[in-house]
Image 1 (cartoon, helix red, strand yellow):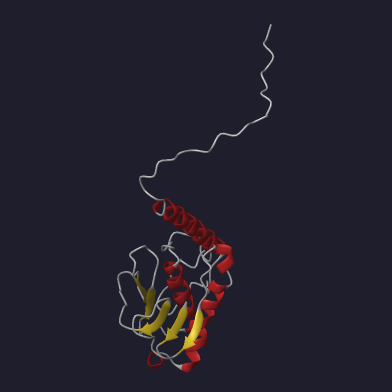
Image 2 (cartoon, rainbow, N blue to C red; image 1 turned 90 degrees about the vertical axis):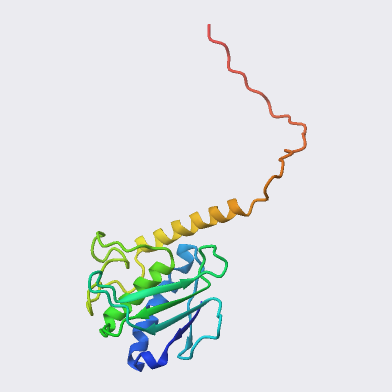
Amino acid sequence: MQVYVAERDFQPEELPSLLAPLENWNAVSETTGSRVNFKYIGPKPPPQNCENCLTITRGAVFDKKKRHLTELRAYSARNDRLMTSATIVVDFTLTNSTALTDAIAHELGHSFGLRDCYSCKKKSTVMNQFGVNTANEVPGPTTCDAAQVKSTYIQLALQASRTSQPKNIEDEGEEPVEDDTPIVVPKPKP
């Protein structure tokens, strides 16, 4: 997936905080079975209708009640639950570099189908809650996160294989073949 960062929205020193979570998710790509890899393209805007693109930008998304500082906005062109493109919007109030890294890692978790887990043990998942400019101290997917994503992708593959089966086709079975496998009959009991 091509990654673009809105240059006007972030300072050059913030770029490593934005890119580190991408590398952390890339590191578990094979383990999760997603085979999704993020490639930083640069601080330019993505092309119009860019497929397989992620843009990281700033915007007003802070929600006092939910303590919501970031938001994933995803688009599926084929309405198949697979993202075609996405934007991660980071609120202007999120300025702590460690919290910024953790927030991007968290939103990427959502892109892989993970849900918030505020009751999970601290540091057990990237999906833990964090506060305003307070990191959750999980800059990338944990072993638990990778296992959850793998499970999600297995389920998605099963659903896809069921829906891709031709409909109303009668199974004619296999052609009969000679079988010389011996038949074992248990000895009768006296």
